[in-house]
Amino acid sequence: NACEFRKIKVWQPGPDNRRGIVFNGDDCLLYDAQFKTRHHPVWVNGDGAWMEANTLESYDDYAAIRLNDRSSTATIKENTLYNGVLDLGCDGLRMYGNVIE
Image 1 (spheres, one colour):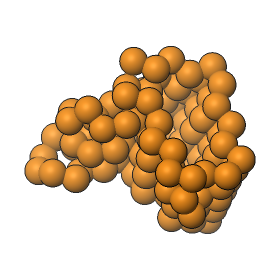
Image 2 (cartoon, helix red, strand yellow):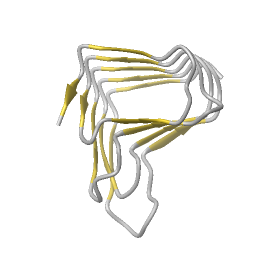
Image 3 (cartoon, helix red, strand yellow):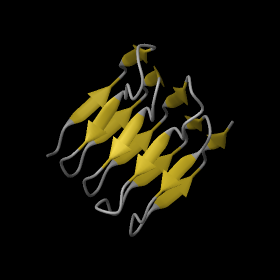
Image 4 (cartoon, one colour):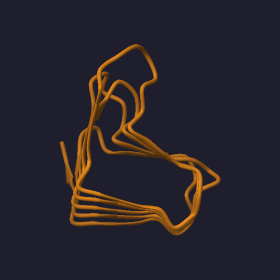
C-alpha cells in the first residue's frame, strides 16, 4: 500500500505476459514513467491508483493499463496510452487529459 514510483523506465521484450508493474496494494502512484512491455504495461488490482504523465506501450498491442474488477477509484491523468485502457469493472474511474495512440 501507498507505494510511489517516479521517473522509472521499464522495457520487457522477453517471452509472453511480461508486464511492467502490478498494483496489488492500495493508493499507489506511477508518475513520469516509460514502459514498453510484452503484455499490459500496468495491471491494477488495488484501490486508489494514480497514474500521471506516463508513456505506456505493449509490444503485442495490449491495452496500456488493465483495471481489474477488484480495483476502484483509479485516476489516469495526462498519459500517452498506446491501445488505451482495458476497464474490467473499476468503480469510480477518472480519466482526463490522456493521449490515446
